[in-house]
Image (cartoon, rainbow, N blue to C red; front, side):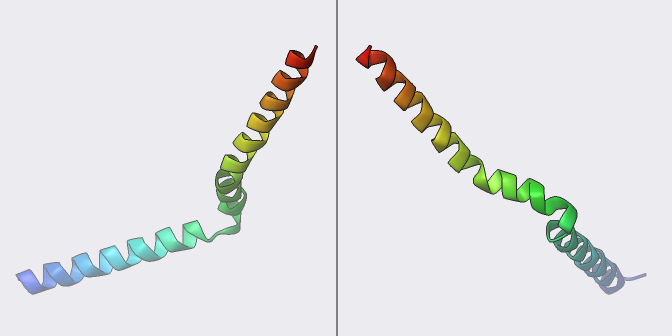
Length: 61
């Protein structure tokens, strides 16, 4: 086999790997996990607001 054949095989392997990664990323089984990760920043913000409101209530006492 020559260099061109190796490059063709490598290109095919990379293409298949890309298709597998895209299929995994858009599969329904990972949707919930990705949605949770995307919304994690907003949950931290809600917790922060709760902490601030609790501190304000304690300081008013």
